[in-house]
Image (tube, rainbow, N blue to C red; front, side, top):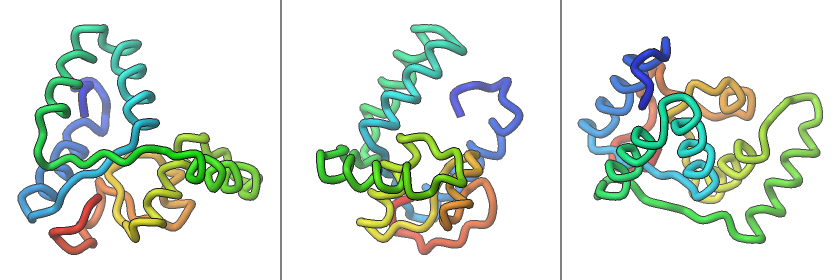
Length: 133
């Protein structure tokens, strides 16, 4: 969503905005912060990463979850047990948090979430408003 040149930029923004308008909230993890800040810096520069951070840091509609040692261990099991998939470790930490919190819908263009059984947006808005995505 930070990169207007990305082919999925508009669809991703539209899905996020529709989710928020429907009463949904957003949830992310410290591992996703790490990946996103690094990716934005590499693609768009340090200023863009700082703007992104300021935007999310000020959001009252975003909740943070932290990857604890217990969650990291569960993610390690996902990572090695699903050896027919090329999930990143960060993907696996997200899977663990989503399972624990009973979250089915995820705002991502990463095909791995659908492979793991989650409902990715952009796509159909299938989760109930008022829940985290």
